[in-house]
Image (cartoon, rainbow, N blue to C red; front, side):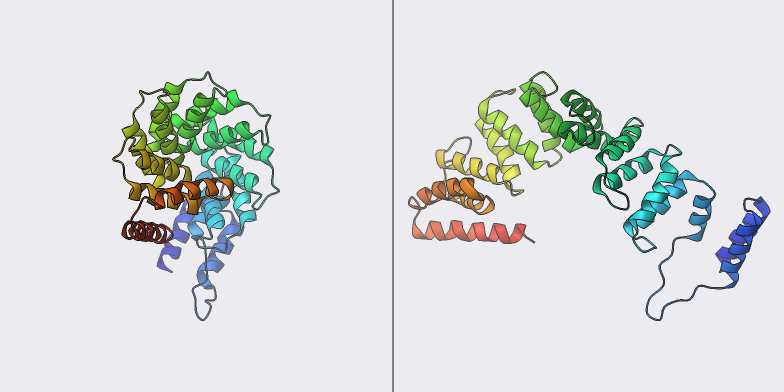
Length: 311
């Protein structure tokens, strides 16, 4: 109550409100909102709403966020879109990005990849990294815009320079394939490494493959195994399979049928279809090389890994 009265005095003194708003604020101060019996009613900070209604773009964006996340108010994507639009029309980059997300997902607005691309572009041109990534993805897939790998690569590069791992991985993939850019395995390896060091499992696996095949880097089975291991420990089945194969041959790691069985067993359980069958056959061939005790230990280890990683 004390804070609301102080706000009332400040607003009257500053002359920032017309008479109608002053009357509404006075009523809100004098007549407290009813409180439900068991829970405090959700509400957005009235100061924030006043600022938003007065045209402050940052406040409009924050009200939009509140509606989008149900923070202090019931979640309402339509209201979120309305407030984001007010801020976006004033050039606020983050609001433009959030509005793009709503159009792409169809939350609170009719789904439209073209509208999403338009808002992402405005945010991306102001340097919002995630907007640059998302715009690159739309050009990559030809959604809402004409497919254009060169444009996709251009936006991925801008986002990658801001340290966004997914953009680094996607641009690395373009360089590996020669898609939208000249093929360059060395560039691919460098980009994969940046994303891999941030924990991107797909980048870790692809970097492992480059070391495995000696593409863009000197062939190094030990390094391949290191990166396969990082991706495998995040549950990437193809990395688990490759790492299991390396243990079965002693390639880059000490030969260990027990470790090979462990990783191939995980790959078989994580894959489906033909790949699952392939991993299961490789695993079962190794089972014959293990003693009953070693086999039981490897199976128990795999069960424990799955239980720990499914929490």
